[in-house]
Structure formats: structure tokens, C-alpha cells
Length: 364
Image 1: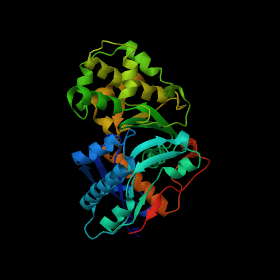
Image 2: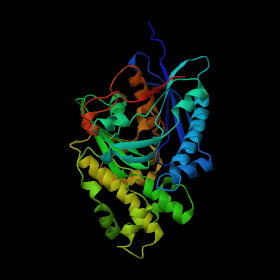
Image 3: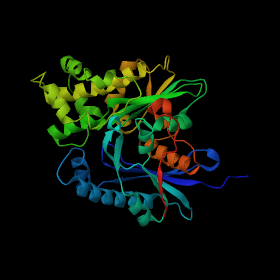
Image 4: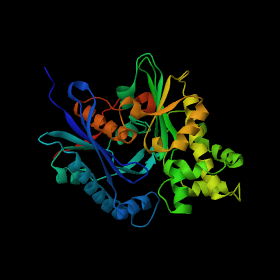
């Protein structure tokens, strides 16, 4: 007998702040099946407002509330593009846009207006996935390793899934079912900011500008001295630490570099810290490394990571999930877990005191 569909929409807007990735998934019988995907770019005004909220400024409360309303409208448009003909979606699971992540101070902030999203769509909304883990003493991140194990784990194999968005995080999927993971540091965030400053572009397509530069070993040495990289897991990070001001302060120690050589060095930093994270994770001999997130489309970064690790690095597309769908699908799965009253965090990854049901419900 075929199980009845259990349809969920997952929405993710990451640190690149280019727009919303969405998936429609069916979890009937506990399986994970992606039925459709969509991408909704942010209006320029909304992206600018969200970028401005990454740092302290005047009238933040009102500006954040207005940005949250704009986010809800973009989320609703993405939902409309995903709605199945005649199919009933059980819930929308939405991450929100991170504007602050300070678990060491006991909070994380994902800007969102889930009540408005429920009103606009007429569908139950599940949101605020990170704060319960933080309340339980955890980092609130990364949350995707539990999903990575469910989707990509393989008995008898040790696999590493590397998510490279604005920041990098790794999920170590042991062949015996154990899972580890943490944020390694910058993924694309510094490269995006640097090329934005010097070329007015949002990102370095395929890492082409970085590939044409020369890595500065003195600058790389200075960047790698950041204490975060030496911290033991569990750990997580974000724009609160890594931003252009952080980079400028370190460039002052290595003056006179060409802008393109700085970009090459930032790419090397991302590759090195991800590789160091894998090497220091206790994974031992790794059978396979798969990459998801926007960084999976940066050929120069993948080549640098493969060279660092001395192994083949592939996209999650070879496992049946496009790199730009993985995080949205992860939050659809977390929404499904919420409705089943199943824990969504992994205390071994986040450092929380125990398993917790993640999310808050906003009924339609």
C-alpha cells in the first residue's frame, strides 16, 4: 500500500543574501523525495536592507521589522512557485535571514515574519529552528548534519559533506551512523565582499578572478592566526566575526598587495580551513567528500580543496541532490521532524545539553 503524501516546503535564504531557495518535498513513509525547486531573487532594496542589518546602526528595530515583512513577501512568492497542483502542503519550514549569531551570549537572530507568511499563503509555517538549541546551551548551528546523515549517509563508508555558502561547515558521516560537524570559517563571504568592493560584482564567478591571482603566503599566515580556527568543536561563526573590517585590519600587516592576489589568498583561506577542519575532525580515512551550497559552483575553490585534501571532491549532484537545493531540503526535513515531535538537533554537533524539538508553529 502506497503511503499518503506528506508534503513540505523548505525555504532557505543564506548569508549571500541573493534570494530564496525553495523546495517541495514528500516525506511519505519517512523517505526524502524532492518534487520541485525554485529560486526567488531578492529585490535590490530588500537585499540592501538586509546587508545593512548585518552591522549595528540607527533605528534597527524598525528597519528589521520592515525587512522581515519584505522577506515574507519574497518567501510567499517562492511558495507560490512551488505549490503542487491539487496537492495539500502540510507546512512551510522557513529558516529566516540570519542578522546576528552570538551563541556565546545566548542568542541567535533570524529575521523573519512567519505570522505574515502564514497569512499570505494560508499554510502552516514552522520557523525559528535555531533558538531552542541555543537555549539548551548549544551553538544553534550547524543544524544540517542530522539531515546530511539521513540523506547522504552510507553504512560502512565515512563521507564528509561540505556546505559552502557565505560560511563553510562540514558534516562527518561515519559509516557506523555517528555524525560530527561544525563551522570551519569563511566560505564565500570574504571573497564576495572583496570582489564587491573592487569590481562591483556580487560574487567571483567560478573563482575566475581568484584563479588569476597569486596567493600571498604572508597574508595567508596572518589570516590563519585568527583564534576561531584553533577552537575545538562544537563551534559556529558568522558575519559577527568575519567581515571586511576584520580583513582590513589584517591587510594592514601585509600592505601593498594587489587586489587580485588578496582574492586568491581569500580563496586559499577557505580551502585551507575547510581541509583543516576535515583533518582535525577525527574522521580518519575519508571515503568521499561532497560539496553543496553556492561554493559547489566555484571550480577554482573545489580544485583548491581537492589539492589540500589530496582526494576527489564532488558535488552532491552525484548523490541526486543539486547543491543549491540541499539546505532548503534540510529545513523542509526539519519541519517534517517538528510535526513528528522528533528532535532536529545533534548534541554532539551543537553542544546542546540534549536532543530538542526545533521550531515554532504559526498556524494558517
